[in-house]
Amino acid sequence: MHNLSQDDRRRIYAVYVAIYNLSLDTQRKTMLLTTLMGGNDWSWRVIGITPGALEVLAANDYRYVKGKICRAHLVGRIDTARAVFEIPHPLPEDQFFNLIWENDKTVIATKSENKPKGILPKPVPIDYTLGLFRCNRLVGFRHGKKEADFLRKFHANHKAGTE
Image (cartoon, rainbow, N blue to C red; front, side, top):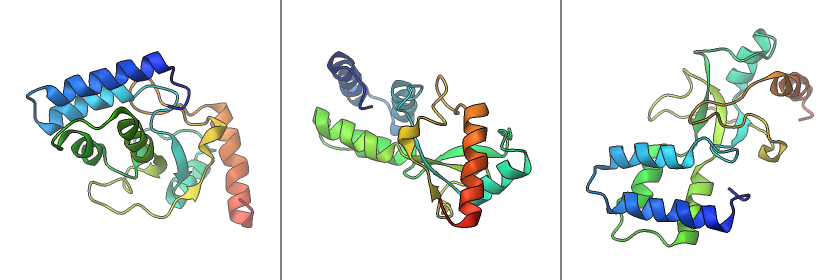
């Protein structure tokens, strides 16, 4: 989000205000907010991985395992939507972007760890500025050779206690 131009930032904020003013329930507004904010390089940045997800990936030579691995939001998207829509007035622009940025953090987890109202295991931190696990066009994330190579080394360091 830090690489947004001022024009794009103003446009996104204007769309947020327009969504805020719609006579829709929060669930529908959440879908619109997801579409607005998802699919960018900065969307839903990965800041960690659960030990369980790391083991699942290790068992599969660090390749993506469809149906078993996902990104899990630390703050649910519906909770973020409530914070920006279920208030008396739209948030000011800076507050809106700060809240989105703070609530945008995700971790790589197993599908079974990412349960509604569940508690994720403590993740092993990953530096999001490495640019790994970037958002796909809307949901999901990129997991290619670069990510597999990173995870291979990361897992070895984690097991050795040096990550």
